[in-house]
Image (cartoon, rainbow, N blue to C red; front, side):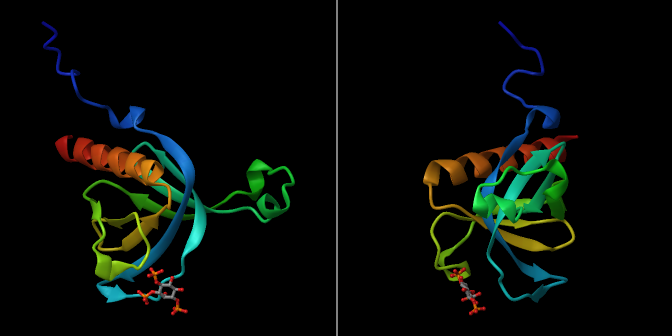
Length: 133
Ligand code: I3S
C-alpha cells in the first residue's frame, strides 16, 4: 500500500501548461468592462496564469523571437475561482469563467472541447492545490 501523502496529489510546480486560448476580461472592481475577445498565448507556471499578446509575425508565418512575445495580463491563481460559464455570459461554446481573488473576472474559450477541458482541469487542480497550502 502506498500511503504517501503524494498519492493522487499534484504539486503546483508540476501543473504547467502552454497553449492558445481566446480570452476576454469581463469585470474589474465589481464593474463590467466591455468584452474584447482576443487570441492569447496562455502560460500556466508556478500557480500564475499569464496571457501574452500574439506576436504580429505569427500571422505571416515568420519565425517568432522570444522578445516579441509580450506578457499582457497576469492572474495569480491563489484564491481564484473557476467554473463553466453559464449561457448568459457568452454566446460562445466551451467558455470557462475565471475570477481572481481581487475580483477581476475573465472568460476563456476554445472551440475544441478537449482543449478547453484540459485547461479547466489543470486550472481547477492548481487552485485546489494552492488552497491546501
Ligand atoms: O456580452 P456581450 O456584450 O453580448 O458580448 C459581445 C460583445 O462584446 C461583442 O462586441 P461589441 O462590444 O462590439 O458588441 C462581441 O463581438 C461578442 O463576441 C460578445 O459576445 P460573446 O457572446 O461572443 O461573448
